Image 1: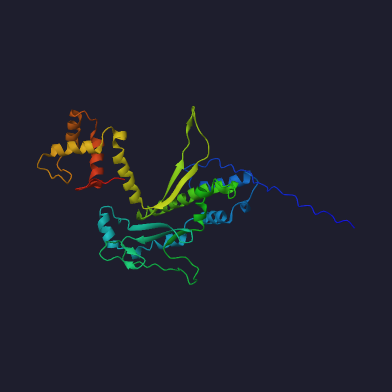
Image 2 (image 1 turned 120 degrees about the horizontal axis):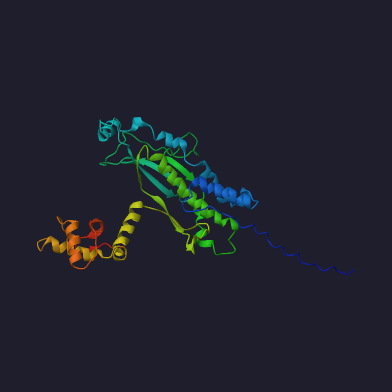
Length: 333
């Protein structure tokens, strides 16, 4: 009996999901708008949440839950505030106290989850910071706010699982082996995480003086003006990072010093030379001069052929007072 030839099974071409239409996604879309765009995009493509990757479903679910209302309510325990001090600072004429100062920390955990915690100014997880001024009489952080070990810390304001996986779009977007049409959802989820932080600020600002020790910073691919209309291509996230706002501000100010001529028509070095000349030969050489007005500097600059206005000169003087290092010179970027 003749043996049958064994034929290889036909190769099946994997079904590719349709591209998602994320119309309406811009850098100004808040958390709720981003979540609506995800739902609408899936519906237009005839898909449901099963089309998302597991981490995308986790992030979306946590973003829908939003802020931790229990933790926000506990922050309003006014009996823990130094109310006498706050009323004195607020002024008796207004009949209301100053808002207490708090600090917010946004961070990525070792497992790639995004969370926010709050502390009173002058306190940390170990207690009162010695010698630092505070507006709170007492504060204690509980690692688990309830009896169950799985409950969240008492000062945690939100917790978003698996956010680090969404950051892979910056590394794997060009790799066809890893690329999927739903990868575009990661851009929206990362923007929604930033939107959640903005929601948090809006909730806290009426009650507290908020200092962000860390924050989320994003860079966008902006729309371009083509002909007589704007390019309506949906927005795209180019960079997403958690950083210290003070560090970012200092970097921006140092960059402004570097580019002052391109932006304002004269360099900070040229303005400083005029400033020193007006201060006189007896002024210290390794510190910035005092008792020289911006109006005098502008007048002297114009005599030297340099453009300038009092506002631009005052801004340059303020930047140098922050970033000019004695005996070294300009603290560059």
